[in-house]
Image (tube, rainbow, N blue to C red; front, side, top):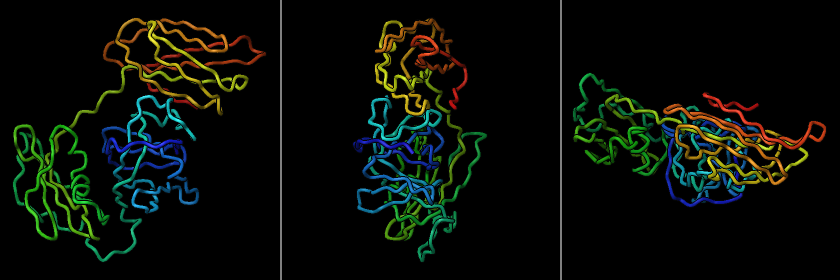
Length: 333
């Protein structure tokens, strides 16, 4: 898991499903973006025996977060991960959609196989007919679907509604509005830009809070955001120079100016400089005297992934850089 020696502000709330391994902890943000979670060192720990994360929430509760748990997390997206004070940096192959610096875990939904027995109602156990009988207004040739959720989790009402709607809350529909409620359940709706009712979600009262129960919605495809047009990885591959300062410019504009640690030679740091399609010149210099220059081309509408590695082995010649560029995401061994 990625660990940092710093704290984030509560600038943003993200929600999704955790994918937990010892090497990567990813939040699948409801299918729209996959974020590497960077955990504060004084609040987090890796639980080896269960393959889980221990986290001290702001409520004082020690949370145990495991694979496939659905969570809501506050914190800050990080544009340049190299600027973080890493205790344990993420593997380069983990970082695809960006890094999120964790501040707090505000909601937690545990899969049913991990739950202890409960006297409260289970979210998916409530009939899908409960709540409003309003008819969805789906576009022509678009079908409606029903999805049931599990619980209980005792979420806030807003948190349970967000969980019940899932990725339908992303941008293109807008904010949910309350349609019909009782002491036992509450139904909420979403409208499209034309005011058509395209989704209804119901939550149920349980465990002193609310559980997501089910959602009926129009199955409207949502576009997948394209990858950044240019991703540049930089790494120090020299045990002789365990720390090296590297400055990289593209067309005389500085895009990288950092110290790079060799660690185990598996420490590639990703950057996403704003580079337009066309012909470009990349130049790299190190504080150890190595210099490098290469021309490359970015085609319009096609992403590219590149890597600059710094090398020095005394019996293999002077300090040097290498450069590779690919039309497919890079995998590092």
